[in-house]
Length: 214
Image (tube, rainbow, N blue to C red):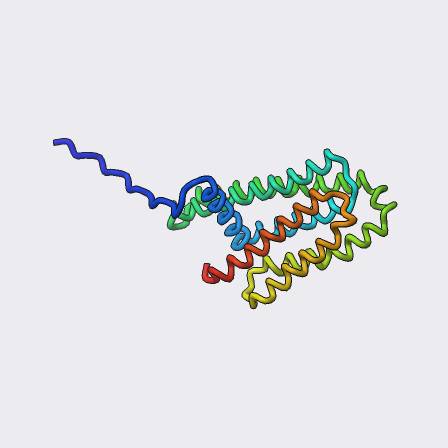
């Protein structure tokens, strides 16, 4: 008598279907990663700094595309690394050397990308150093507004519990400072990138308040 093969259990369906629902699930994954992964928070603040530099220094098209691509590529790699870590933890319930090597290799890939981005960023700054030196007033203004803006973004992504009012104040202050840089921005694309990263940071702060016991 042939024993029928065991049927594969059905995965529960998502709460909703459709294109907009797919975007919503992707957004939730992005915010969850920023909220709970330390390295992703570091990458986000680094992206804010890149956005401030790109909007403060008049760069060529190639340099702009390169910096934006590097920021997005590191985000992509870190999200995949986080997903892989979750998958390994789900599949392996106890210590396994191969699981450790898998996680280490994935983290190494992100590290290589981050290191390469730093080298590219430094090379661009060196190449445009004469531009930086001859635009000291604009650079000083960008630093004066950018440092507190980056500090507000850092407050938003810090994992420590705090009143919601602190996050709201930090977000509004950061967006206000960014608005002050917009009229003299050398690139509205980088200004928009910075604004998008601030929105992500604010959403991550909200996510941690909603699920503090992650």
